[in-house]
Amino acid sequence: MDALLWGLMLKLFDDWFDFMSPETVRVMLVDDNEMVRMSMAVFLETCDDLELVAEAENGQQAVALCDTVQPDVVLMDLIMPGMDGVAATHIIRRDHPEIRVVVLTSTVDPLMVDAALTAGADACLYKNAGVDEMATTIRAVAGSDE
Figure 1: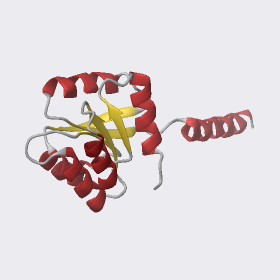
Figure 2: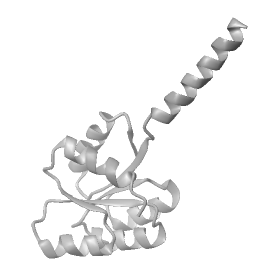
Figure 3: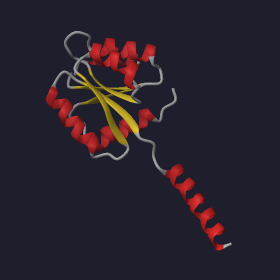
């Protein structure tokens, strides 16, 4: 009887722990600057619930990787050679509406930021944002059901 009760308690605790544990957010980085990608990768490693699943150097690579990797959130640079972040965001959100996009930019051009949001980006952060703000934004858009 004690073993049965103990087993039931362990099962209930295990179910509760699974319910309370945060889901891992699968993140893809898209930036033509290798140093930015490396810095962001180090940041993501410090967050238990954020997992780096892919990196891309430009929009074309990002679009192709979304088909195979299926990230939850894409951190997208705006200004890149070839296909820029606005065009890539539009294609990703059109083809994969479940994938969220957070634009990371150093540009202060409000027209470019507005274009990214119009293309379907869920949020926009400047590259000098703090790690807490970045992690909070990634988690927030990953939990969005829009």
